[in-house]
Every structure is written in structure tokens, then in C-alpha cells.
Amino acid sequence: MKVQISTRLFVVVAMFCAMSAMGFGCLSTQHQMVKPNDVVKQTEAVKRAEVSNFAFKPYPVIVDYGRSVSQMVAGGKYDLMNESDIAADSFRDPAKKGKVNVNLYLVHLGVMVKDEEAARMLDALGFLPADNDCLRTFGETYPKKQLEYPIIALGNAFTDAIGRYYVSYLDECEPGMRCLHENTVVNPGEKWQEHCRFLAVQK
Image 1: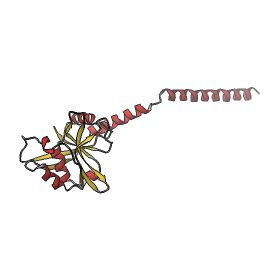
Image 2: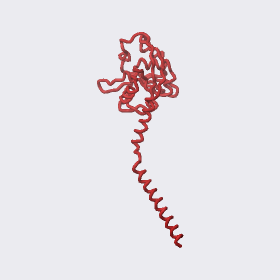
Image 3: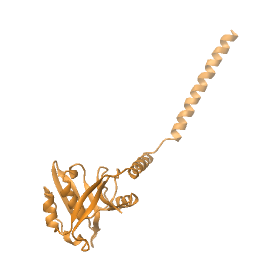
């Protein structure tokens, strides 16, 4: 009888301890729960770390500053091009002349970003945003890349006197159709999607 009681008592105590341990485990889990915002921050931090350690592929081009903008656009053979109220020639650097060999990079930041955030991240990675001449040349030299993802050039992005924000980029506006958005008005408060690439040059 004593042995049976001791055995039952042992089983009861063991069950109580096990339930207590499970209870403490649940409480511990509750206190260590990660909020959705924290998950986003952690994910972005990981992606940015991956970006900083990634060896970006160079895309060599020859930018011919002797060509007019219309010649460069014609050479790109785009299916569609937006009509901008800003003269494209006004963005060209008069100090740049002739043909220049340039290595361009498609920087994938991996997160949704506004333009100013993208510029800061590019700077931290050792890049400068490419200008519109580089964008047009890239589109002509590597015509199929923009069918994979939008390619943004922030080098000539600007805000006019009445607050409109302009930026140039390449994308696929319809399946299989290549579009050049030259000095297009966009909402500066909106973010570029994660799959976008930013055209850049090394510092």
C-alpha cells in the first residue's frame, strides 16, 4: 500500500511539474514574441547586409556624349517613350565630350525604398546614381534587361519650382514592350518595389 501511494504521489508531482514547466514556457514565449515591425526591420537588416557583401556585376558601356539625345533614344529602339515637358538636353554635362568607357552596375537593394533612401544606400555601398545619358546607353546596349525588372537612374532626378518630382527609368510597360520614361513626374512619397534595380557607377 505504501508503495502504491508513493508511486501515485510521484506521478502526480511529476505531472504538476510538467504542466508548470509548460506554463512557464508559454509565458516565456509570450514575452519573447517578435512584433511584425521588428520582423520587417530584421528582414531589411539581413537583406542590406547581404547587399553590402555582394559582388555586383559590371555592365561595360561606351557613352558617346557626341550623340544627341534624340540619336541615343533612336538607338535604343524603344517600343514606347513618354513625352516629358522637360528638355532632355538640359541635363547633359557640357564638360563631358566624346566617347567614354563606363562600367555600370545594377544595384539590387532588396527592399522597398524612396529615392532619397536609395541614394543613401548606394552611397554606403560605394556607388553614385547614374545619369540619364548612362541610362539611355544602357538601354541601347542591354535592351532585354529592362524586361526583367525596372531600372532607375537617380543621377538627374530633381524637383521643379512647383514641387513636381522628375526621375528617369526603364521598364516593361506591357509584356515584351520596352519603355523609356525620360524625366517622368512621379510621387516622391512612393517607394520603388523590392525587385527594382538602381543604375549606378562606382565612386
